[in-house]
Length: 191
Image (cartoon, rainbow, N blue to C red; front, side, top):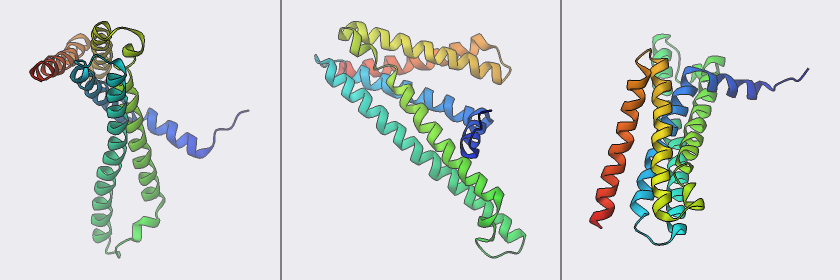
């Protein structure tokens, strides 16, 4: 029988849990919309390699930023909670850092940060892929289509989780993608 290491089990449990799912969805939305903005903004270039470099570079930067942001924000919240608990227990500062619960929370915080960043990077790569395959104009429309499809699927997923109308939830996400596309086209045309 195949044994899964405890650290891998912890990662799988986090991904399957509410926190992991939230960070995956958030990262995919963030990555795909920000990359769509970058490729639309760079689409005035006659060189697909410029668009690809801008899209991938922006996506990687966004992913790394989200790893750092998610980890530091979650850790700050965790630390505030730990300090409050220590005060209520009349224990010295740092007492609970040795606890299994605290160590597990720190590990989950790191995993969630990684999930967020990786999901963002994956989401940002998807609108860039068409620029490897098509001419710039076609690739741009395909990138918009891919982003709309991703966001519709994520909207349906969010609707299912929140027990809302899945079609309306999907359409709301598509409206967000279209708003980003329109605004970015306006900016691209202005310059």
